[in-house]
Image 1 (cartoon, rainbow, N blue to C red):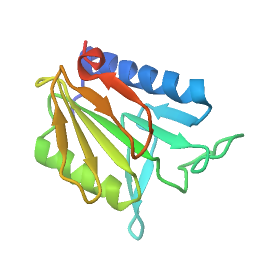
Image 2: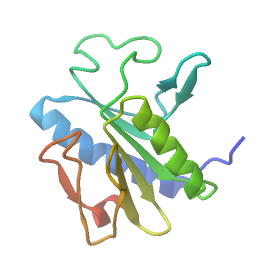
Image 3: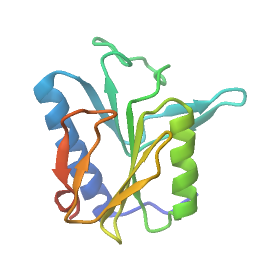
Image 4: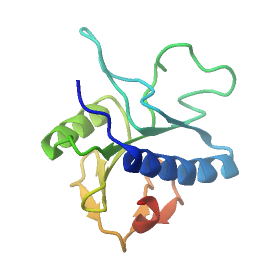
Length: 152
């Protein structure tokens, strides 16, 4: 069992979720989901991951009552905020699992380094510092935010 991540982690998750939800809601694109809502990354045996924040378009999670369990389709975007006990090699492996399951973009925020790393299939990961502009075009065309605005 991993130790709980703490208040700073929660603040950054909330900021990220709010920024994404404002963009998604203003355009009527879909749902922003947080709080480790499960994403199935493989079957037989089943593996389920819980991103801190994720985005599903209405194509992948239609309007109406959401499923009671896990959504059968993966989100377009899965976001992880590294906890103090998280290791980068594990975050990279998890990003690979998400991408292999059909997630278009994986975002990893590093609290200590104050960086955002974007993973996409067939592309090298891109890391942005606090002064960088985060864009997630493969999942959310037109979205952009200064990385520094995500950190407490």
